[in-house]
Image 1 (cartoon, rainbow, N blue to C red):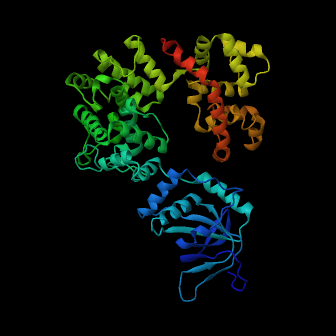
Image 2 (tube, one colour):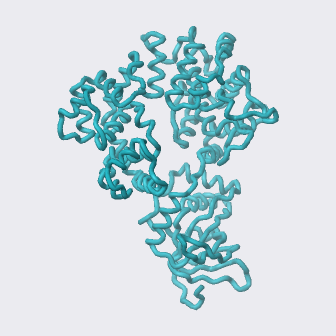
Length: 535
């Protein structure tokens, strides 16, 4: 590396435990420097906003900071040096001085977390790979490639780190309880990136279940990591930390008493423990939360008749196993099964209602899990909810159908569109609260394509060019799950979705606000018998 060049005024970056190494990148051999960034130099690493994303939310940065405080080793950050002016200190082997502008290609969130940890006196270990003689174009290309293949930090790890924050007392209590020797799930909860043989439930699913169990006391239906933790905190403020802790213990005591929680030394097949799968425990938590006779001054109370009825449920039966492994429809079916078996004399819901007991339970399942049906069935339900003419107007506006009678024929059920109109119509129904069978049965990448078209992020013609399809038919075959995309095209679809994530979010939010009144009218109609609309 160059040693005779004059030093610039840009602050120097010190790399310790450094070692030059030759790697192969895109078929070309190149030299890089691997080592640790001196913590005092972290603030001098630069960000090129032309290709970098914005920083994560403060809560997620705090989670990364907590990982550094706990001494965890996070993946190396990727740096690009626009030059090659570096030198190894003569009397300090492995210590390198880099002079020039050095940009973070991948790892600005980890850098932000490390800087936050330093505010508490921690000297974080931040590993790095430094590439020499880079350009903005090269860095942008590498940034895209790294983010296509990158393994994201698992939700369980993020939640564990959020729970470690002293301000999140509810989540922190649950984390500590899961490690208490007297608790039924001691050592059985996955808070790490990968599931160990002893784990029977993930940390995320545990928090979701606890939140749903207490949903009648506060916001217990969120899905985002930060939102789950915030919701639990608000619930704890309403009912008290000690009460929440007692309810969690009682809930899993009930599961242990009725179906059993196996010890690790007994040996078990995790796949066979259906009663600890998320959809089973979540449905049980929802059932208990929604009946006020199971609660006494905020505390969960289970009587013997309820326990006797729960014992009639065989969680390893073929039907229940199918529900547990299924999607949202399986969750709704499990909830209704609990109502049928256990709730015969437990009609006391936490919500005031004048509807019949059976009707209320069906309404509850629909409001929790959405109205299920094919595109035609969901259109029929919408027409029943808002009348045919208005339904036709709604469909014509969202799909950009220039011929209004076409939308009227859709409303009449005499025809179903294809291609662009079909994708838009499918996503419109989703915005209105429907769980559309065809959308659900498409692949993950197919749903991404539908979203990009329906929200007008790209035209079908643009996507055809971006993905190098020879004709539109191939694009729609992938979008509707009738064939799989190649690996290269999957990466490109993910890349486009990631790059335009803000546009997708904003467009989706805008339409959700506009259609909220229609959504509510459709959901209101779901209080009526709904079997005719189910797939």
